Length: 241
Image (cartoon, rainbow, N blue to C red; front, side, top):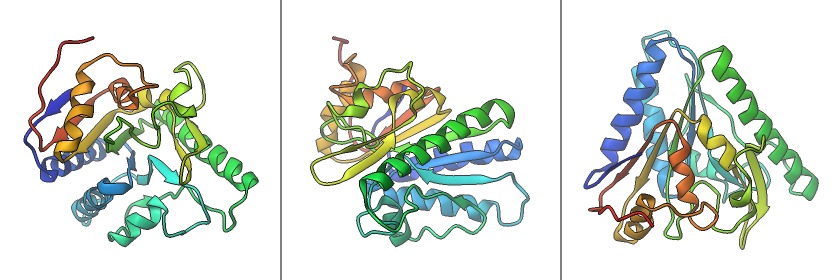
């Protein structure tokens, strides 16, 4: 894991786009997972940069999906996929794969949608060994140390890494959430985290510590094959505790 302090969103875009284009030039298909929330505009910008770069080239497929989603009917106002669209996500050369595909909101569709997302991630992991799929993910980090849809002490935070479960759904205070689960993190080739604002200093500095993922889910980011944390703050390393 590498933490870069005093940087900007432009550094995140350049890191992601250059890595994705490098793999496309090697004829490696790419799966790009993006976050909602404050990271949504950045994810959309990365997708737009990739489409511009691929305009006059024949590259393998780039598939874009989400790291986590707020459950509800397809296209509901609080959906992370809807948020991407509001910020201009309209893929032409990229293939968009939303998490939500049901028009109604019931317990059975919640379970069905969670299972479908798990199947999508499982298939992506299997493609890594046969088609050289390269998996990239853009994360944020919360003031409570959460990342993706994995909240502290939530059911996904307790899933053992040995589990074959790559996605999990659970009810939170406001929304039912569907998110990647801890066992999926080791299959991410390149994880990039963007965190801005002084309120993110403590959860970022805690990445230097060894804290159980149940308490500080951002610890799971260390499991990716390569993790780059980019922040506009001045982050100091602490002694491990």
